Image (spheres, rainbow, N blue to C red):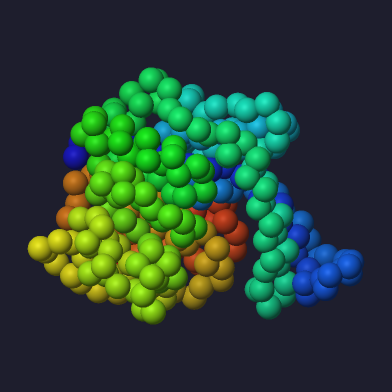
Length: 298
């Protein structure tokens, strides 16, 4: 492709409030922390940022609140190169994730969806944005009815769809019928098929293509009547894997939008996930295209 692919992301946006502490408090206990960080988050916003940094033209569809967090979320997405023209502002609070992390890396997280729950239905303008995209990328932190409507609009407009089924939730038949590529980790795969171990054949009975992420072991790509391959990970000194999955998925959307063979697209996405894991943080750790290419070429 001579032009950057247009990646439309329909998903969540949260303000992440991260407190670093020597140890996690017990119920009723107050522990003095070491540090505090506030950053844009939510799987939708993270994957839109990842796609933009990976070289795509990223457009975000979602909802933020009318509070100060909403202003900050919108400005940080725009600063990352994401088109926020069609982001909705809902009266009330934005989505918030309150995260406590101890020195051993253990965490405790409370997510209040806020405005994300108001992202219901699609406007004619939003459907047109999806139809104009090369790839639609969705997750499951917004109402499943909206995810279904977005994938339906993509199919009608000839736009390819990727569903990152995280967190694991019920997948309606109407949604699955409009998904071209399903991206899941091992626990999500088990939740979807109801089997003791990830069942890729069972997933392929639902959708035509599957990427099963395997953490440090890389990923597995399979399609109906086609390849079923293990794609190894890139070896790095990992500092923080918090946003590695979002880096992977955003980069995968860009690579597929560029017309790469999907096995190669998964390898390139593996490089993005590994590059992200070398840095501490979430959205701030999402790698640039140059960082991905440097690792991919090794």
